[in-house]
Image (cartoon, rainbow, N blue to C red; front, side):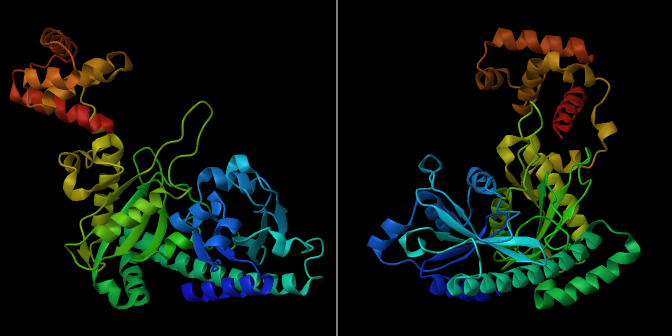
Length: 411
């Protein structure tokens, strides 16, 4: 189907005599028309289009700038003026790609001398524009059909991950049939959290991943999973085809791309910075039989990546160490009463010191060097930790309890 989009974009480029690009509604690049020679490229390209083609995605700032002109609500082509300060050196003509009233993407043309006489006031008065809009409608129908198919696969994957046991067998069989032979091959599950789900009137693309992301190589199915974390945050589940059980690279590539989606991360709140998203990779599986267990692993790895920056933003289940056990603890069991006083905001420096000391296997010299403090300062802080918690840092079990409590609090 990707080839169909390329041919339709080429048809629009030919009809209007200008190179066109097609992006999904999340500004992920799907296809672009050929530009001329080097001289022509210098004349017709600007930083925004160049970045879109090279990185296959526009930035959030560029997206917000274009959406401010009402492109998501537009029913007809519209002109957008240039703005050199935003990197938009040339104006744009935007053809909204819609199907049954729902916007699925945009066709972009640079508004140069080739299109200067194109009258957008009456969309079908100019036969060139009428032909281009007819082609855009065909693109919209294809994107809508693709989104519906993706949504159906997503529903099966969601049922398999968190549905009732009675329905999992049926979901597994249906997903296996839909995936064909790849359903029996090596697979990896990726969790991205938090994830902002975005439905639409048709139910297509209900998880907000965007057609370009959903169609990337190796992605078999995507779905949003509500209430995935203890705090109720949602996550995105992505099922990835692997070339071999020992080669998880495609899953890491997919995770990196999904983290760049505008849906990844928590929405900004008043006076609070947006929450950055993290991704977790489960251990590879062969076939669909163990996906519910893989989902637990993927979520645990994503939580570990958020808790421990050195692990993220993409963490693999095999590499998160003690967080494999800590993530399985219920929230109420994670904060032991003896550790709880140390977790108060007023004692953040003491908690950091204690965790560093335990991470360094109780070696005072290494700990002081890691924290950039004098040994006497370290000893003073550790004494305060013992006073607050009632634990003896010369005792192995007390050290273990404190270490687990501090690590668990990060989750």
